[in-house]
Length: 230
Image (cartoon, rainbow, N blue to C red):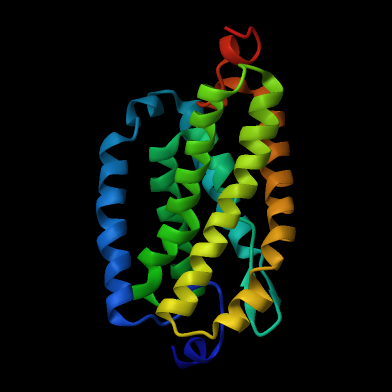
């Protein structure tokens, strides 16, 4: 797609990458996704409600990624929603679901297929890892409190996951796609601060509503720990 090659687009599914970088994406994505498929708790889907929740979350994720804004020299932004998916479904199903979302979006909107795996690694797999690491760190270091889960894990974890994804995408654009560093880090990266606030608000509010009204939908939320403090 020649037009994509000339545009400093931060949507990596539309960026033509060198063969070596595209290969790195496939080498990293393939075993991570294979492991997620093997470890995903498919037995949970015996409960029809859990299946509908997962499908509904993926549908919301695809819609969210479809809502994009372009600023500066053609840099495209969108919220991720990965933190909510990870905390709701768990890391394995979040990895599988986000891969399906990337596939659907590329089928519908087009893109550079060779760049798809690296795009998934940066905007999905990495945020899943950051979100789950934030949860585990909070469980080990902080008191078992409802507000710790909401503000530290859901709000702060979501913001951190988006910043990590954005910085990883910026590095791929500069080191892999050859975009000028002063353009990427001068025009694109500063917007991550504002976007992180929106990401934190969106995911935090969604998780707050879920743990209040449908806590059994959120696999990372334990009533005994965060409500009873055990």
